[in-house]
Length: 156
Image (cartoon, rainbow, N blue to C red; front, top):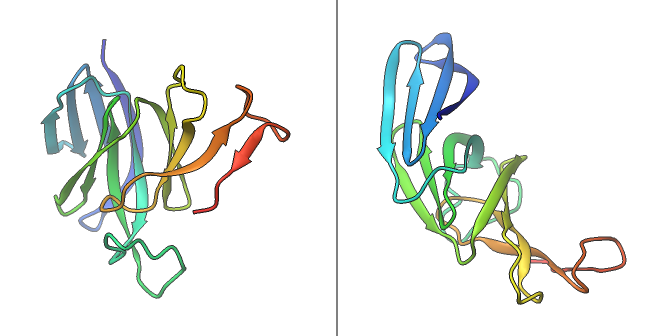
């Protein structure tokens, strides 16, 4: 069974809704009545969302606010990778060093949730500031629960 998400858009100087349709490993991104991109991924798609990444961030990943603008990227999550596609068609695949279960966009940064493992010392939450960067751990569990007394925060 397929799933789809609708997003408002202002593509090519007209207002339209962009639709992302997912069925298993297949994803179709359309705007208006036109297909923008269609993909078949190596694993089933877990989630898709838009993220306004900073332009010209590069692999160095300058996290400070700058005069550069933002570019809207479609981010597609599978259990082992994140595919990021810009509006101009530029594509980057981010290999994940963990098994992903969910993602959220927060002010131009993607938060990724990792599936818990038997090794409780591994981080469960990662951030991605740009598709050319590697995911960075945000916090690690201590004692098996994420809470004010048990979470050890890592500053990156």
